[in-house]
Amino acid sequence: MNHHPMESCPRCGSVQHVRPKGILIGAASPKKRFNGEEKAGYQRLDQLAVDECKPTLLKPAPLKQLVDGFFCDHCGMGFVTSDLVQDAERS
Image (cartoon, rainbow, N blue to C red):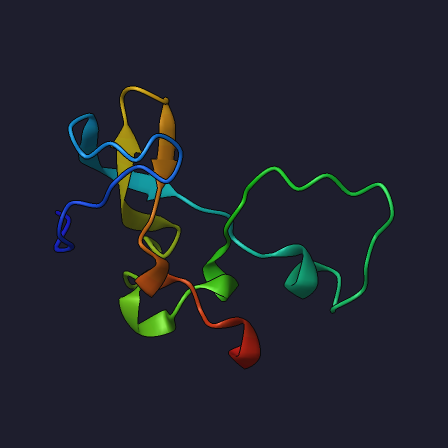
């Protein structure tokens, strides 16, 4: 499933409590959803969306939203490697 080496939890720094897990990300970021406009009062439910990831590292449709990630059992937090996220300069 996950081809990345085990990562440490960004919250607690532990590797001991981290395990590979499929993570469901958003279909579109607010930037894409609202054509780059800032929408006052919009609350984002996800923290990462398909269009914010490197396309070459995503699965083919319809599984684009399911990415290989990790879950920390100690913190109860899911996360992905920074390699998956597009650079800010490229967006």
